[in-house]
Length: 97
Image 1 (cartoon, one colour):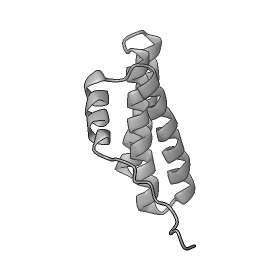
Image 2: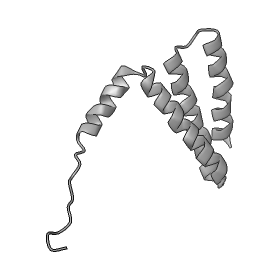
Image 3: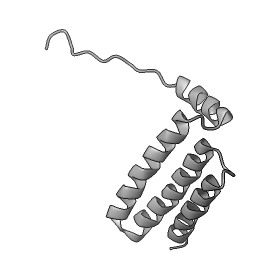
Image 4: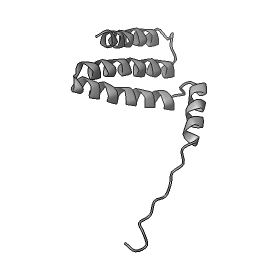
């Protein structure tokens, strides 16, 4: 329950700060994505799969918006560096098949 309330409390505070021009647009999206992750966690823990799936989808969309609207350059660099380690492996069917 505390994750749910904390997640929902972040949303109006973030929106008010954005309206008053205290936060950049990308920061607003990042904070709202984090709040939806908290709400998704609360839904998962309590067994409310509908709330968890809706909040998970919202968190994914808001994180995508954060990434495309600027985001934090250091975080983006770290994620790209981490992703470079993974290489795709081409798998083909056996020749006799």
